[in-house]
Amino acid sequence: MTKQEFFTYCSDTYGTLPDYPFEKDFETAVLRHGDSHKWYAIAMCVSRRKFGFETDEVIDVVNLKLPMEMFGSFGAPDGIYPAYHMNKLHWISVLLPEADSDMLKFLVNASYEATKTKKKRKKTAETTEI
Image 1 (cartoon, rainbow, N blue to C red):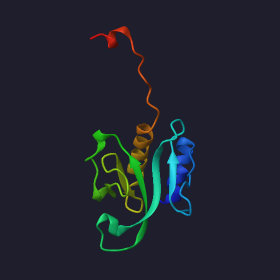
Image 2: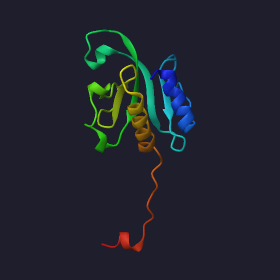
Image 3: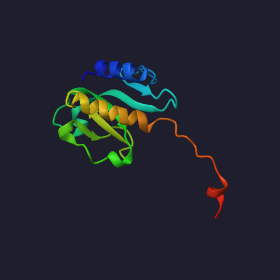
Image 4: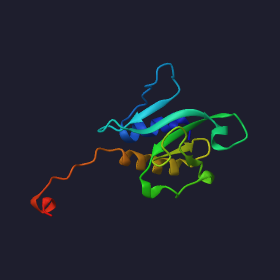
């Protein structure tokens, strides 16, 4: 999937468009959740060397936030790595040229769900009793 195809998927599925919040950086785009405005994806150009390759070729990468229970389920053969330039406990990097489109859609859906506004529980007499 190309970066533009990724943006089109996010627009069609979630109604979100890329946002370019970094001054003088017109390559790095953020996609924000519709209700919480939290980032669910960040698309950027990164050198393959940052992922352990022996080349400085720059590729399109998408960072996605995942629930903790999903970590360890994916790896380099899937084009999925610990996040570049983000918290590696919560984020992954997906190399767009290498990732399967269906896998990427699954992961972005998980990221979108992980960043939605959490509903707060109302305190009741039962939950406040000790």
